[in-house]
Amino acid sequence: MSTVEYAHPEVLVDTNWVLQHHKDANVRIAEVDYDPAANYSTGHVPGAVLFDWKKDINDALRRDIMSKDQLEALFGAAGITSDTLVILYGDFNNWFATFAFWVFKFHGVQNMKLMNGGRKKWLLEEKPVTKDVPSYPKSSYKVGTPDPSLRVYKEYVLQSLRLGDKVLVDVRGPKEFSGEILAPLEYPTEHAQRGGHIPGAKNIPWAQTVNDADGTFKSRKDIEALYNPKGVTSEKEVITYCRIGERSSHSWFVLKYLLGYPNVKNYDGSWTEWGNSIGTPVEKP
Image (cartoon, rainbow, N blue to C red):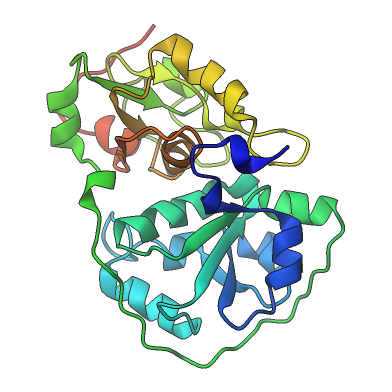
């Protein structure tokens, strides 16, 4: 399937492009993993650096994403300069790679693309992998102008409830959305005190936008068929959320770049903040 059909095909590269360009001096491949021991350490794209989702993209002390200074240090250690094209890919159908993409965009990084299909497609195609960890000369990286419009906080969401020009998209699974479970069993530390969803939110699980076979994004037509019937349309401001803000980054990417929605924001406080906050309204079926 051609990516030209998407609103912004320029943000994607395919695995063949990466195979041809991963050695280019002005290209830096970065694998973003939830579990590096099970993924990056067992074999990765030759020359790819590791960005650990938990250690590198999140602040170690605060419930927050990495700071501007932390990003500049991470890129500097990877030898990335303002002239470097950063290609992100990762495990879980690029779930965590799109989280990194959103964080980096929030901080003003511009020269960046996503490898469609992530680790899954690369391995399915039996493209070369290595266990060698690359080392690059350190650089001095300075981010550009940040874009705070990509992110919203709890108070903003509270003020947005039931407004006709805004729509909330809960990208969690149906059992999380209904409140039947507080968190998937594999993530027991990421639950909230209450189950359910933010009032008025539409449940469109993030994984419905990718092909099960190879992890690539579905066609634009198929993705539009997920969102449009539920009133998630381009003239509205769309706010995505999940449990801790990473799956919702994937849906943010899909809406903003593949469908071209002009006003998409990620509420990364998501359900662990909302469901634990005193007085926030909760809805159940």
